[in-house]
Length: 143
Image (cartoon, rainbow, N blue to C red; front, side, top):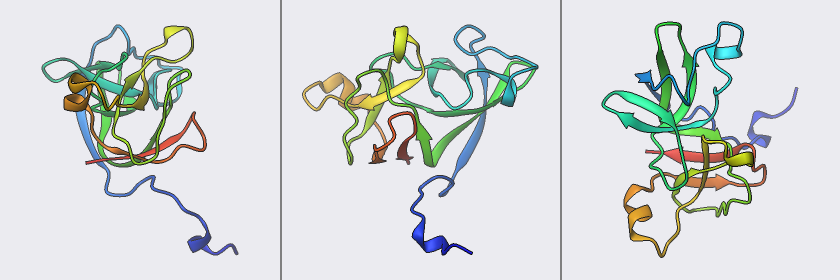
């Protein structure tokens, strides 16, 4: 049996999950998709009170979309260790805070490092990148 101490992972550390409404535009329910939506695993932001949407470039990141139900509610991990996908050609610097980014073909729901020279982004930025080796699964910790 492999030694569990040989595996470094931040996923699952101190998760805090919350129920929100979905915007039913960038996030949609699908009975046939794993977790109830093809957007599972992407980064979300607020679009209205108690409502989340996929992140656009420079948006504040609320957390990671985990599950969508038929009543247009969803579960979002808002704190703890998780992986989120990096945006297309995004800067992903270890130790930096994150904001939303766009993926390939301007797809929403991705992350990048906050631009240190942009005050508006620094106000919205949160968390920290721990591992950027796999840009499709960037290890972050949100608190």
